[in-house]
Image 1: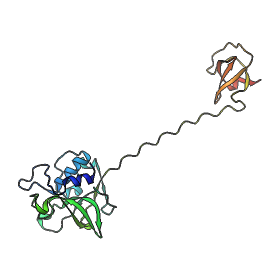
Image 2: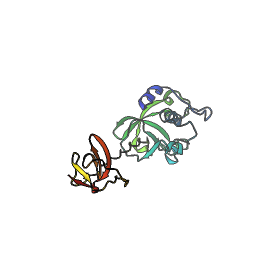
Image 3: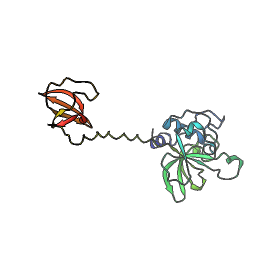
Length: 222
């Protein structure tokens, strides 16, 4: 599921992934956990408060996401943990949302839940909605890890150069009746034609049939 399809599915709704806290179950982190589950297959779990998504990111999340500087160019679907809006104890856990792809001056638009009164009731402005927030509130950016590039295929092996002085089609005679691997041969003909040549290995034919492979060091031209 892409960010756009996720947003289309949940916008205007509310989501709870864990049933806590009792009586205020529709928290901002529930939206992010639902996204992580749907988009990346991250299992539902207790990953902390909103600020903990940046300050003490759970290892299960780090397997799927990279932590990037707050000033990087944003991409739709980036997870943006936000600093508390003020010093009130009720705001100390911060907030978190998903970047929609829209920016407006020094503000960025997020898809969020529980972004109005913050009482977790999932109603009115606490439903899933979009809202612009100051970019200065962004702790940092959590982004889907880039796919590893496909390994570069190994170059095709370079065939060994042909032995100097010989080429396919040359008429030759063995100096000694010995094969390329050193085995003694019975020589039936006085001369042969090179039909294949790879490095110092020459395949010899006579009367239309292969006789043997020999070392070019053991050949002379006829």
